[in-house]
Length: 121
Length: 370
Image 1 (cartoon, each protein chain N blue to C red):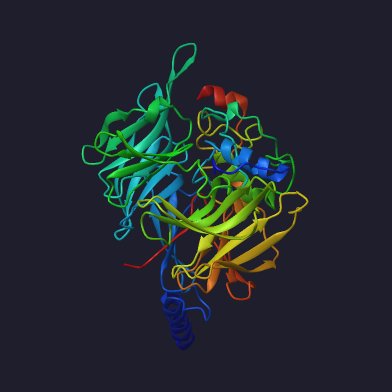
Image 2 (tube, chains in turn cyan, yellow):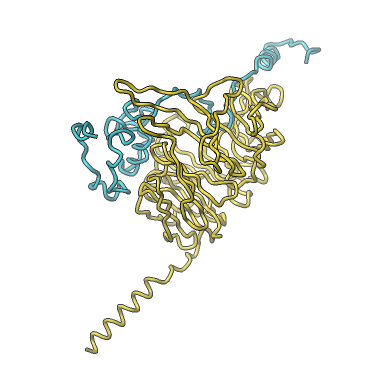
């Protein structure tokens, strides 16, 4: 391309773009386009996550919420997605749901955890 | 007395009937077995032909968070929900071969990710530790650890390629296990003896002048040959300032990407059939103008001809993952909850729902019986 000189704006844009292309690919990333910047480091532990609550998903909308909400309870709980509303399973309440494997069906078996209980552990 | 005998006979007949395996469904997904981790601390196994649960593998490490299939497809490497424990499960015998954790005493070591050597000599673990002191937690450096599966211990820490420490890494192995591909700006290729850099794949540069960068979107390597990935890739058109969706296939060893553009880029998942002729994707509207809330679509791709066949709206569910049945006739929509919705891959009509007794926590795998 060195022997070619752009003579109009589009050609100049092509030249500037092709000259400026450099490292910014994130490969084998799941989740689809567009490319996302590397997420911030979040240490494991639910108290360190500040995601929204039951009423909103991580985008602040409602499309990502399951219906009924119990269907998504455990998946989000394990990922510390709803930290404020559920006990911290990593550090304080690992057996919170030991008697309930399907939240939508038998959520009544989920234990009640009070702050006093967490302090004892 | 006669009445009692009749009742006993009826009960006996009912018991025999109950013990007989359910007959195959008229339109079934094939003759393989479906494996999925659950909140009950098990891997549940379903028969594709009858969609009945046929067995559970009780895990010793509790609730699984991730199942990784070995290249030989005979073992699951399971990470538990606390990211502290690993368990190796033999699929044919449905037994646990071993478990391990790196935590001890007041030091918790969380495994943030892992990759299994194709020859199953070692694991690469991405770890970070938190040590509880009397007045604080001491957070350790993030590290890539080499776990020797024969010695059953960490034998060394792998230095970060080019000294660049990462919070998340994407690594893959060559099928023979001799090379490790470290995905970043470019792909750094390391040999797996001393983990020194031997080559680079400059993915950050466009594969054709003016094409723009390549982004790996949704890829499916479950039904691919080792070392290959087929999926949807996005290329950036810097002139028109638009993103183009491509169907492509990556050959990791040859360091090539074969791309065919099919239209404007959209967020769609990708799951390929076992014969690699068809693939399907799911679109879930997130509230944008292009994808409003409540918009759910099946996309069908002709992988051989490299084209989008059709887009079909359907009544989906928020949060969906997709797997194609072993015979390619059914689509399994799962994730979050205790149900797997079964769709006809030809008409995209919902046929039925597989009810589980525990919520799903992992990817769904479909494997041959033996």
